[in-house]
Image (tube, rainbow, N blue to C red; front, side, top):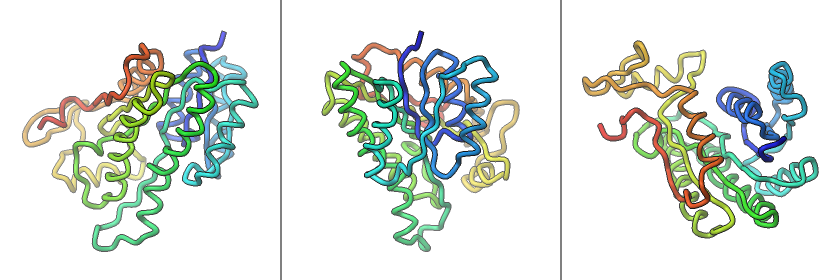
Length: 255
């Protein structure tokens, strides 16, 4: 029996794919959004099939930065499942550029995927959720709320605004739709070393035995499982848990 129908953006690879697979394993009908990544999306679906979750995962191609795509995304989910219970804003874009060299295109790219797209997708999803008696919207913010990354200024600003958007929607969509955010420190690294290089530039040492040293203090690293556990909790939490941001960062925001 399905635990509900969900849509997750940017889920053809990396963390998004792992989140989609975890929710499929929990019994959700998962719709994975991607943009120009059909092969990767099919590979994720194949992994779900191999794990014994036949028919629980479906791919939908759409550019989440395009507000016009929001309605079509939700319509595709409704056509297949008849309802939408959970939306996860996972899609993200990174363009490391020194602040002095930023262009309008750089800013538009970050704001489109990280803020404007989620805003209009939330609007479309909320209409479907409200018609079906309620739902939940979750946003993954990363470490933007508490850390400064000089080469990622538009990304940080957009993600921070996304967290504030979830707080506003918790009120605007009450009582039908609960809206919350998760703010993990880095939990999924790229294979090319870019993530670690950025962290070294901030004065952080490389990860050692699940800990990172920051200002001489050993801080526990966030794992993928940590983030999955929090997302699964929020997906099934009481409806009164809304407008909340849960930090999953080992306490680094306090240092």
